[in-house]
Length: 424
Image 1 (cartoon, rainbow, N blue to C red):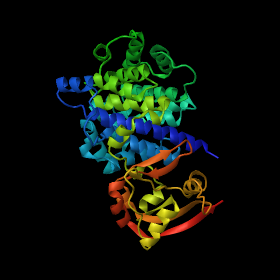
Image 2: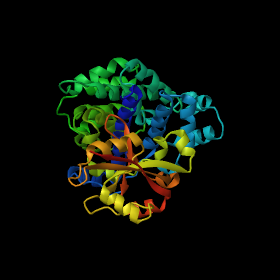
Image 3: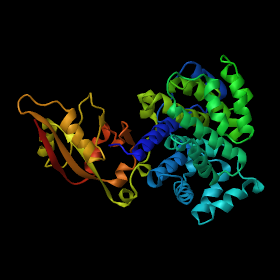
C-alpha cells in the first residue's frame, strides 16, 4: 500500500523534473536577444546536452531533505546547500560567499540576515528552487506557507524574497490539487493571492490577474518584469502568470515563458515546476528529459547508500537474457537491441519482482513468466546517472543509455545472482 510519504515524494519528484528541465531548457537560450527571439519563434529545440544551473542544484538539496526528514530541517538544508555548492552552476553573487562561509562553519542565521547591509536578500533564489516544497505539502496550504518560508530563510530573509518563495510554493500546491475544469489565469491567481504576504510580489501578481487573455508575452514581461533584475518581485509574477496560462501543457508553458527572455533559466524553472504538477510528468517531452543533464543520485538515495561503495540493484530478465548472462559467467548483461536504447536496472526488489511476475508474457513452451537478478554496482559510477521515479508508487530505476552498458558492466562488483524465478 502506498504511504503518505511516498505520495508526497512522488509529487515532489514530478515538480523537480519539471523544474530541472525548465531550468536547463531556459539556460540554453542565453544568446543574443535577436537570435533568441528567432530560435523561439521557430521553436528550435536547443542542442544537447542541457546543463542545469543553481536553480536545480539547490532544488535537489530541498528534495533530498524532504526525503530524509519529511519536512524542511533548516540546519540540514543549509549544510546541504553548502556541501553541494558548485561554483560552475551560475549562483547569484551573494551566494558564493554565503555558502562558502556556511561550509566553513558560519551560522546561516547570522550570515543570511546580514546580507545587503542587514536587509537580507530579495533575490529570486528562494523562489526558483521551492516548487517541490509546494508539491510535498500540497495537502495543507498552511504548511506550504511555513515550510516555504523556512526553505527561503537560509539564504533570503528580505520580505520580498520570502514572499516570492511562498507564492511559487502555493502555486505549485494549487496546481497539484486542481480538479475539474482548468481555471482561467485569473481564477488560478485568485487561489494563490490570499496566502502571499503583502509585498510587491503580491501587488504584481494582482496586476497579472488583470492582464487581458490576449496580452502579448513581451508586454506582460514589460509590465510584470522578467527576472532581468534577479529579484523575486521582478521574476515570480511573470513566471506564475506563464504557468497559469498553460497549466495543462508543459511544452507550451515553457515556450511562452522563455519568450519573455530575462532570467530565462529561472522563470522557466519556476513555471516548469508548477505546470508539471497539473499536466503530469508525462507532459514533459521525452526528448527534453533526455536532453537535460542527468540528475545526481545523491538526492534520491538513502544516506546509508551514499556512504557505501556499492549500490544494490535488481533487474527482471527473460530466458534469453538470462542465458547470455550465464554465458558471461554471471558477470555482465548482454548488449541492448537497436530498438532498446535504454537499460533499466531498478532500486527496489519488490518492483523487480512485480515486473518479472506480472508484466512479462509467459512462454508457450515453458510457462515462463520471469526471473529477477541482483547485483552490486560501484556507487561512484552510478552517481553520474539520474534516478527516475515510475508511477505513483515511487518505484525507482536508473536509465542507462545502451552505449554505456559496457562501462556499466565493468562497474559490477561480484557476480550477478538469480534471486527469484516465476512460472505459471
